[in-house]
Length: 453
Image (cartoon, rainbow, N blue to C red; front, side, top):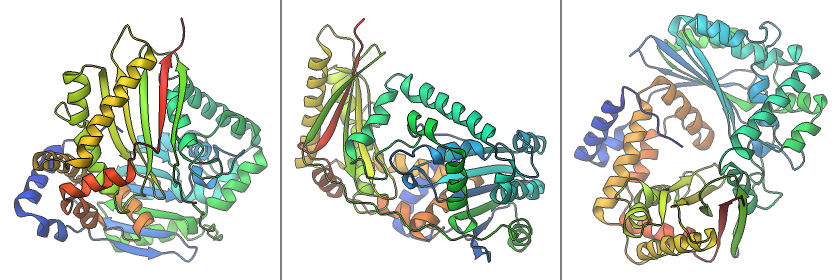
């Protein structure tokens, strides 16, 4: 995902410099104080006081994403991301944005495999407005939800799927990768956006059942960060959310282990000008052993013009014009992805991509025998830490991260432990993670080549 830089980026760079100057003890002392309580209906609330700016960030995560869906019934979690902005008993369609914008705030939402999160940032004197809007749709969304509303949003979501994936250059690869890595019964097999046929077949009754099952206070966590007094903020939360009806929290999902047994190769055609290769491996879950090392490996391979794959494929042996590598973490299993876009060539796409794969494997093999240099490790850690500290400079970034930490670890203030994973890494840890998780003979190789003209 692209990095987002703010005016606080300079502060983040300075903070990282301090981390390296004073070493691990400063990382261990990194702390974000918070207050946590649970309402009688089961809603978990986390408050983080920060008076640097007169703003408040509200981050409400429902622990339901595409992993809660089943084959033939995909796309519900993402559909609800849209439906939640269509009004509730006391808020008309379109009024959420209108009211927040008038108060100087804004609202957004995002769906992943595990969660659907709704967040607002408002001036601190508009906290009641944001809490009212969130509590009203948590309790009273179904009062405004009709078959016509569902049908309208269904078409919008289907159109988004077409534009963002099916009709976007190389977009179909991102729908296919999870299908090739995970078996059909695995909760990560289908894409977060779902399938068009499943969305078309969904009934109004299906949608209502989904909301009643997963949009319950016991299945949600609310984080409020910014210009608040915790005692006062708690009273406001209790005022707006205490009347939300309690319902049972859904049972945990069972995630079967995933292990590839061979190389799976597939080629898709697309309306693109240049061929692209995707090399993919299933890797450990976020925060599991190996996750941080693979994150560093991705930076060593393809972060910057001096990185190994970029230097090899773009400069030394000019086969490619774009190279990227990433560890894409999820709570129950991640994906390590290397994708390379070829340069224009008179050779066949198959031949060009085969040469690219061979060059990638040579670089990976070199790292299997000789770990990254001290400079490579330091550059990778510095880049990761700069982005990490940068995210802590905003109240919205802190609120989002604290909610994720609460969901994944049960500790909203997991910042020091998270950053400490990278500080503790040695070069040989990166080599060992590569050797364990990125085998040559067990991976997915997905090629996208231009359609015949």
